[in-house]
Amino acid sequence: MSSVPSRITVPKFVAMKAAGRKITVLTAYDYPTARLVDAAGVEAILVGDSLAMVVQGHASTLRATLDEMIYHAEMVGRAAEHALVIVDMPFPSFLVGKYKAIENAARVLKETSCQAVKLEGGVDQVEVIEALVSAGIPVMAHVGLRPQSVHRQGGYRVQRDREQLLADAQAADRAGAFSIVLECIPADIAREITAAVSIPTIGIGAGADCDGQVLVLHDLLGLTAGHRPRHAKAYADLGTTITDAVARYRDEVREGVFPSEEQSFR
Image 1: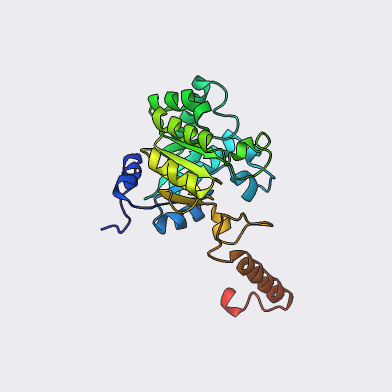
Image 2: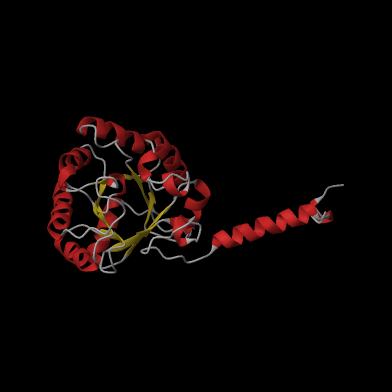
């Protein structure tokens, strides 16, 4: 009998809030890392448009395209046996009218093995969320700091407009979103939002009282180049481990130690 837990579905994910069970979400962008993250037992994997920064090396998430998101999501969806897999709708794939947004989101589900999409917005995206949900496409909303709106918001800053944040979250809830990411908002506001909506809140830089948490995998593993966000925590230092391993390989090749008899054929 397989030891893999049963698949997390959207209804199971939503039910965790009422059950008082904290939800863990991590990003992944390819088959091998998604397989490892899934095996660790997280409830959801997010194929984030953060890949533009942590995988491609760009300065913002705006460079990710729909085709690139589908390419990475197909690998992640194929690897995941347990976790709910959610895919970011990149800029501006959901800002082109609700019918085109349905077409773009439908491509994600049709061309990958993923189960839901995420889009940035609250009050301003009610019509699109409603349209996607009516088309049978599960939607996770995203309020607070919106990386795709980094220019309008004046940079990567904590968002403190309580009334707007609460209105965005409640609007997404009413529109049919199954969950909401709360990014970089004060913990007390996140606590209030979590109590005010019927669906799970997933925090990133939003305190401990959200229904769950999400981190970028590269931050968690210590693979982030340069500045690591304050809200992130490194649980390993794989950057140093990888650099040290490559340096050992380099030295052994130069010294004629690798390959040894053990790695050679006769």
